Image (cartoon, rainbow, N blue to C red):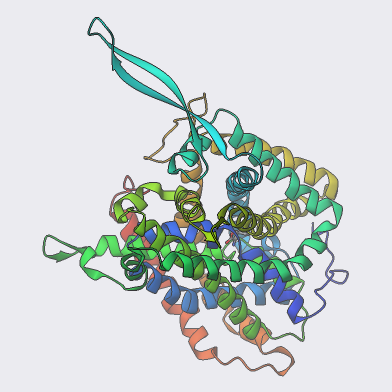
Length: 497
Ligand code: PHE
């Protein structure tokens, strides 16, 4: 049942409103938290280059496709494919399942951000329990647990926090409740409007921090690592490591989907609210540019400083998802203004701005889950929201407490914690599959004219039409197939996180 009847579907007030809403969904933790650590993990410059190429080719193709399908069918992600072509229901299911898996762990990371805001504003210390081995008077080895107090600027603060028996769960839950409250209270409109101020501020602050970071001794080597593609890393025993390159491409592709909120029906739903007279092509370009700029700046802010602080590529790779939280506080303590420690204020402001970016993204994720439940079952918005809330709170627990020593801690599957696993499976497996079938759907089942006509509606030119046609039918699916097959063939047991 489609509860949002086509006629009564509300629409954005104009092109700018659409761009802002889509950018609010796109710009979030993916840009600030995920992009820098993946760039560090996959070798810096080469990842950046591949990422940008992915955005302007595959990203452009898929976002245009999703927005056009949404606007043409006026249906949400779950219903749109089967609404056009009956046999394609499973694709609707797949794209709907992805945000359902992402939302709990996304909120856990949102909770990490909250913790840092809290730490900068109120309490910058955390007790870290450490086991030390000593030798007793009789010469016996004894293992003792000692409690050490760590400061927020210490790299140990992050590990102490995520291993804490309850704090990650509490902060994650607060983030979930806050996001749900935004959806319910109607404050969300206000948040989206305030993002017009918050996002430019985040942008400026990121530039200030990057410039400061680049002046630190040793940062230039990190800058070089981040900006210049270095193929020599990919040469192993004199031969080129093709499999590693494929994995880097797959990682960059997954990140591109994640960051642009693609391959999970979100842009279809957003497109369904778009006005017929707006230009799809121009809007898509703008969203891509904004989103990529923020990711680029986040990398510029984090990677050179992490490098300068003595964290060579190996150490950065090891910090993985923690890179943002480990590297930035170390710069903040160094930031002084006229001799005054300015970093504490800056740290608080920075994490508050990131919090806003994350909240608007989690709202778009949660709302998709709510809408899918309603579309499927026909329950009221209230019931669907309560179900979503309960599910998210419960499913966030294994991600939040997976790094600790409690019953949910230490569960490692394929070398990954529960959070990493959800992230890896959605980004590197499910999204490429969903994107692949979306390409087949448009390129081969319904024909690319379905999208082209919608982009050209109301006399808008579709400048990249030929490019689009070749991409959606040939290049995109073939590229995804090659990457995926190499990945599977190289052994499912291999995970680089
Ligand atoms: N694109 C968002 C980000 O970069 C994350 C997100 C993914 C939001 C999926 C909505 C849907 O943080």
